[in-house]
Length: 395
Image 1 (cartoon, rainbow, N blue to C red):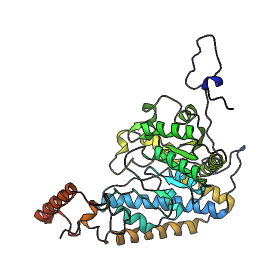
Image 2 (tube, one colour):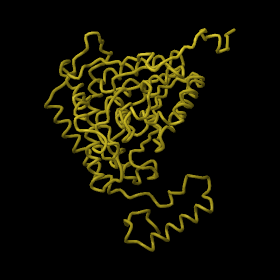
Image 3 (cartoon, one colour):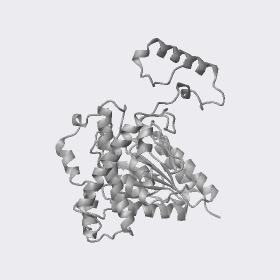
Image 4 (cartoon, one colour):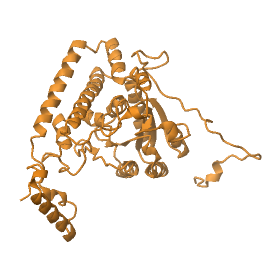
């Protein structure tokens, strides 16, 4: 019988023994140099030309989408946006290593993972414009995507809520005997939430097949990492909870792919959680409400621009003979046209009936919500010029 006494595993000492920070040196997996060449000791992961091209094309697509939607927010066409500039490899490289049956629980900067799975430009736009074609019926902020058919759980605004949820969902996958895992994305700032610790501990104790994927991009909005924690990043926390851990260069698409593929194999073989810490950098502002010039320098940003994941992969593709510069330029131009066309179409679609604010919340709408809805309708009727004619279609 297994000895369940945890003290049976503990070595004893007879003098005061202090364990200092940095006792364990956690290495970072890196396959590609910034110039796109392989490190001498590195081995390429098994990537077909089709998968490699899809990864690269998706990263280019997301960068175009981000640029266009930031512009749309500045024009007042949407209210809010979060770009993933500089972090595309973390989301796309990891998504490429998954099975379509694996559940994705995202934070709010993983649009690349959703696009890789097949989410269309029109679907992105309908959600961001909160129109009638938005499956969330306009009740979420922009960039709070979700798609049941693609196994992508709807994003929540509060930080960290998806982490214990991912542990629970993965436990359900394990109990059902499914050949699938859950991947849960979050930033290093969200790792300061209590949900992070609860989720990792739950997954470790119950041996849930979940990949906790932390994008350590250097800042929790304006707070740099060295003001968030004194330990060795987020990877050291996984070890503390008894979770197998990998640290990877988050700007290296091949390394992210290889790390996630191995993590998935282990999660299924051993029915256990894995923590991946992807070391990357947020070149964009935290959101369209943020101005990063107030807390970091241009020189700091330029150092990371030299490590751009899209340029790194493009150079690798060139060396493989899988990249054509003229064809890539045409792809980017066509993507810009596609995004602009979908944007113009989505903003013309009517918004949802105002009743959808309270519908689907309860089996029957309770009296207090009916009263609030009536008061809102009266307010809009009283001040019709302050609201668009399509706003809620008040009768």
